[in-house]
Image (tube, rainbow, N blue to C red):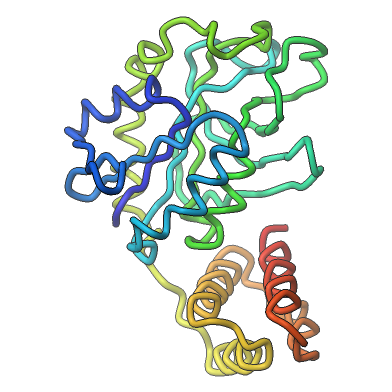
Length: 273
């Protein structure tokens, strides 16, 4: 498997660049070495969205990629410790009230917490937020779930403050905080590389035919059809449920690309809930 690591800050990326011997490609702005690539997205939803939407121009190996977001986050003082690394099991977007759920298939040593993505730094009413708070997580989930199945989206957050700082630029020694946990981060990547994330579920002929007919009815692109197959495999792997809920989406033929993409996004949200 290949790892695509996403950080918001260069300060977060430096220990990762050092431990894996990554080198910057001047053409793509990706840091790379062997099976690991790293992209610095910038802080906030707008910068992150722009960088990720342009990512496909320089990166295409999504079929064999695990996306890992590593970065600092604010933490609820009653639930977290500064300097501790946590794994995110659900993401809330404060702005549009959407909820996203990464699929965690393999065991790991970290405490799991929820993550809320906000537009501005939180330094008041911090008890209103449970778990963790960042400024990019929901955007990363939304954009990268277009390319990789949900069980290959991993969010690792290190608590840098207890939501008592009015500007993230005042956080001292971000690089040092990440460096203290770099061995743990590395071990998690190794365990992911050896787990069943590379395994595929073989779809039954009935399900395969339904997906193919549905893709044809919706006039899905080749990439969208491939993503739909992966989502279906992962859904069956996790739930062992049938796909009766999917059938209504394939009844009506869309009148435009916009309508098709809207239906496709609704299907993605169905698999995310």
